[in-house]
Length: 41
Image (cartoon, rainbow, N blue to C red; front, side):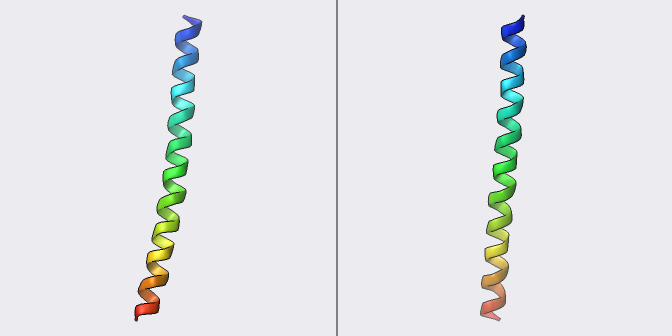
């Protein structure tokens, strides 16, 4: 049971970290797109 709880906790932590990375990457991507869009205009 303890192993199962540990695995579940590990999966949740990995999901949170992955989501955090995705948010940062998408934020940088949107930032670059806005800069490029403004430069074109």
